[in-house]
Image (cartoon, rainbow, N blue to C red; front, side):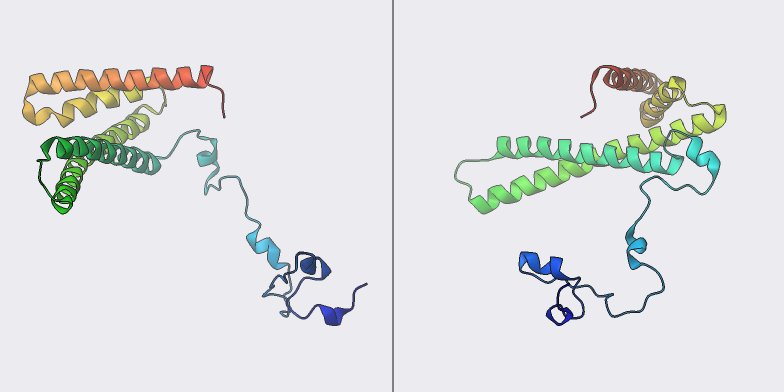
Length: 194
């Protein structure tokens, strides 16, 4: 056994000195009635308040709302910034200073990114609300909810432009939702998990 005077209070023992460093243990001198390491041994499985929640294999309506709105805003902002970059590069004039070009670039990226991000974020918000509403109304979670939410989202997003525009946008929304579901099913079947 090693001499305890070699390992002062706060160290864990001789294994700490094998690397040439002493590990600090802030709980060494405390007389704790239980093992403090259990405080940090957290469960890895999801925790639910009610048993019914653990049986459901989908996100809740709040998680769905946050997910689709966030994904929509982020992808719209990135795509809009790329379009703003293209516009700033096309609008550059010979003889401009670097400061003017940088200002033009930042203004164009910020303006386009914000505009497209807000549009896609609102579309994601409406889609998530409609899909969650359909699940609650029908008490089933299947492809009909997603396609109907796509139809309703497209129609509602373009409703201010007239009934014809709303019908076309609704059809496009339904087709896009169906294509996304088909792509998800194909990916589950043919793409191996990494």
